[in-house]
Image 1: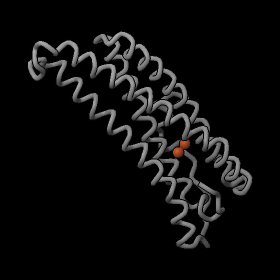
Image 2 (image 1 turned 180 degrees about the horizontal axis):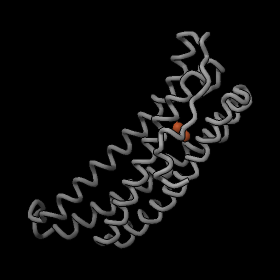
Image 3 (image 1 turned 30 degrees about the vertical axis):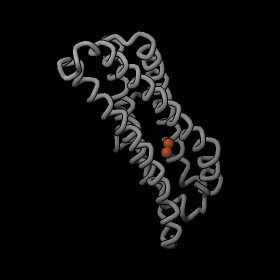
Length: 186
Ligand SMILES: [Fe+2]
Ligand SMILES: [Fe+2]
């Protein structure tokens, strides 16, 4: 699967419906979206940091001349570190889903839910590759603080940000009812 294919809404299987789901079960299922909100806020933070670094790079007069070079380099390194931290956080979120949530859903959801789990796992694989690529670029940026390293990190961050938001959206929509109705711990 490519990152473009990951975003193909039409190729994403729909979950079975659970007509007897209670309000409390649905509220439980919505907790996944609340967890995703934390990660979305993290990504927003890295994006804001990037805007700041870009502005200082485009107009160094924004920063006092004596410290311009150092401040910019420091900001770049900070952006690289933030990207690296996000990589670790997202990887950890997916590891937890794959170790605990998906097996429980697969066991309790039967063949009706299987195509959704299969699709979500395939999307995780694409995202793991994007995380690896960003992590590498982030390490290079922290070490070298050059404009080319910043460009690469920016590009890879944008690709991961796009894929992960698309994945989160599908996952929380598709799993809200199953997580609740099947009482899978989140
Ligand atoms: Fe996921
Ligand atoms: Fe998730």
